[in-house]
Length: 396
Picture (tube, rainbow, N blue to C red):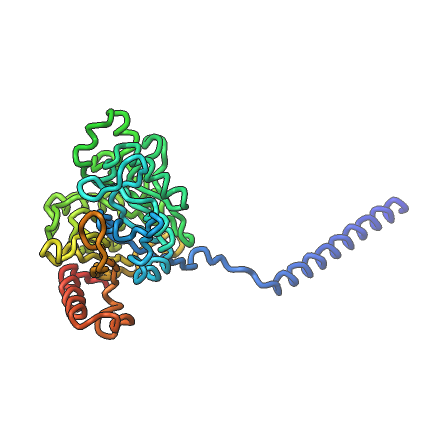
């Protein structure tokens, strides 16, 4: 009987403990039920990034001599005063700088472009983040000049594409994280004006980025895997032609097939049309040539209105979860405005003022319209209309 009482007491104690535990757990669950649960917004959160890019920044000798100051330095800042807020206001800005920056070689325009280093500082101040060096003039100051050009921009915090500093096989191509969206940027040049003959095969393969389809396909496919958006900037086509060649069309479509989302073409020195390509249910974008952004190829020098015109491409990307798409695309026509200073240098020619204009700011109703005289207003209006028709961008 005593043994039974002991067992009964133990059983009762266990039951009591179980009951207390159940009450405690019930209280905990009730408490948790009143605590707000954070929802996983990773799949619904939207991220956006705005990219702008322009064509050739091509410094003919008159552009840098006109920018020379009394102390021997160069000030290119006024050239970009009307585009600075457009470029600086973007989340990522890419400029195509065509030429070299190397103090070991004389300054020069065509055919061997070599500009003062102040142009790099000006581009930094204007708001550029990336500089495209994949072009046919990058060896104008030999390989040492090309590598020094990279160093000059990099020292200011600007990334570059198109030239590899040590070894292409070992260096990663550029991927920028822009507001949570990874954007890969690749540049390729059709050739180097024969200057590559001064390089060994090993130097060529280590430093240059040309239109080798095998390498491009490999890199673009890799970029598609690593990045959310892949931007390719090829340099090819026929100079001063307003339509792309068959080779451009075929290759740029291949780039899209390989994984490019955006193809921003350059080299013809004039604008060529845009194209929208459907792939896997999403729209991809091609502009066959963005034209010149700033140069001395004005109508007064060439009797051709198109080389003084260019584009500032303006794209917005949107990422939702793991899906990233091109949300908007705009093509802003540009124009180089130049006029004589009334000053003449030892070179024997007149110096000029240069300004790059975003034409939306200067057409009827634009914020800077009143800065132009009647003749220039007519020129701006004509350029805006003709370029809009040529580009024929139908992005809704």
